[in-house]
Image (cartoon, rainbow, N blue to C red; front, side, top):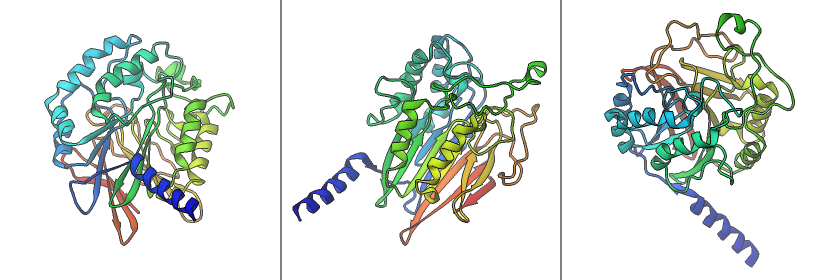
Length: 346
């Protein structure tokens, strides 16, 4: 009897020690805004629109600056300019910020684990974004490699988990397509080699442990797309065995309460991937915040994609509520003016 009491007490104490209570601006729901690809030298009126949304969180999904360089210190001026942006400062004062990097704030275009000064780049990223995040978030490995992290929050008695993956620091080299050497565009083909990794051994071990935690809702953040297989740019399918491994990990750990969000693509898209029974895993990609690429063909058909992509500047909104003990959510892509241009719900 005493053992049972001690066990129950331990579970309750652990829940409140490692899950942090939050209070949403809207008493009826929790609002998370997310986006990617924010150039420090471009106008960013979309940040003012996001501020008007009064989100509880703003997730930056990578490419928080644009200054491709193999010398991390050269990126400092870009970070300084971004953090001096009045609209950026107003947003960071109003809402909680969580951020991960992608290639342009990490190193150079499409760079991965081969980048020799990635540790120095990590320190610079955390010098700026680390101060916007609470001290209980300790990104990366015990040896301070990478910037992946997780966080659990309590909202209306429900445990919500954020998992931010680092798809740069440990990533193996990509396999370029034959024609990309002639076109001048970096495009890639699937590589099913067993020795290729997207996350590295230590991050995979950490992720497996995080996915086993009992939570009511899980938001899994990847800088690059997970479900997409057809677009020829960066994506998890470039290491097809790694993509299958991730989807299997999701499927065996309460996939019904999981949503994927991603960035990178300079286009907004929604995907749904069939899993157990009639359930389909949803991924919402939001890109870009202020750097559209109208001169490039970016919209590729896929059996998993819902409708056409949205190529103009955009941001994503994830709204969560619990009614009668049941989780409900709506994820949408919104235009510069805040208009819904696509959405999906559970």
